[in-house]
Length: 469
Image 1 (cartoon, rainbow, N blue to C red):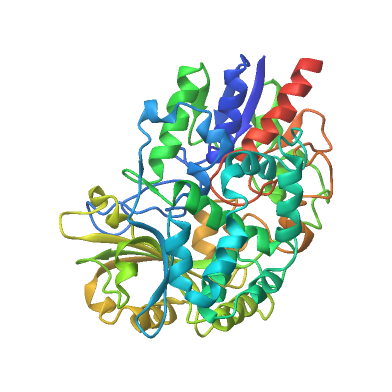
Image 2: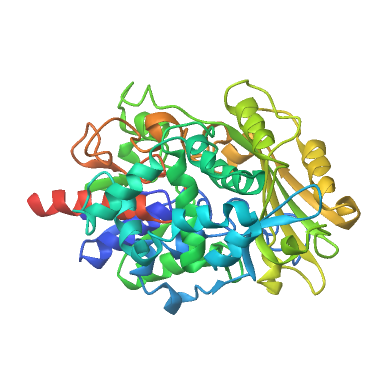
């Protein structure tokens, strides 16, 4: 009998399997798709030689993840590549605010009235960032905080809505960039703990940047899989699990799946009936005949570029998708241009380009024209660079990855208390009604993003249970 079976080979499932195998447990991992990866895959979606990331592309949380930093993934081929700027937010007048590795450069891009405010906001946390990241990403308490005072101070700043925090800024440039950071988790700007979301992304950039993985996000998944195999774990792909009886006997079963899928597979009935899914996204992967022709020079060297004219436009786009049930007229866009750091992603002189906008959960329309109108506002002539595009709305994204219910790439609404208390209100969110069944997906704390910490935290709960039995 195996010690543990893991279902789902996304970053969290792979991390949970690795953590258990590192501690001497026998582990087998089962994945419905033909390759491992989940939200960290790389495929030729458009033309030969153009390597796209269907979901995650830039990785501020991965490079800062306490779980990944403790693993020898570089030995298995993972290499982080850094653009000159982690992120830029251009404005219609051709200027841009930036999120730089340098706090000073970032603050200066906001203008003199907000430079000092930004420094005072982030500088107290930067010297203690590694400890803070570990403590924050281990909530609820899967480990005692190493620095409870800093964590409490971060909570005082981070728990209020981001709209409260941005009142500290006097000008729109800082407010807009920060609103864009919050929108990465598709949460309304006025939601609980959204200040913490923006701060985490900013601190991550100042600490270690927002890199891409050489060759694509698949490199991270492949490194985790190779390490798991070296530890003695086995991986079985093209293996869809519809019920627990489909799996071999084991002392524990760990699911990197949505709560909905787990309830169906394990027969938990309505246990997760109150779990909410958030807005979906409409994603386009482009093959381009050259770099994006941004008007703002800073955007040309940034790995990630946020698109929203101001904080009001960003807020309106989020409200339309999450509360009003419609696609926004001017969608807020998150874009990634891997080629500024990794020229291997496309043939010489060509580029891949990654972009998505928010839409209602399960939306079946086509946002291509609205997205490209937005891009043309900040990069005139963009359409002339397009060689091919691959579009995916919520139904297509859910078909690619069953965890993206209704196209929700956060695997559950990141709003209200559910931003932190997911998938249910519980001090032990990784356990389930069955003592041998656990959940480790992004539907558990610390939530969405490629960081592996949900898998890491769940593995702790599993090995404690295994050692007791």
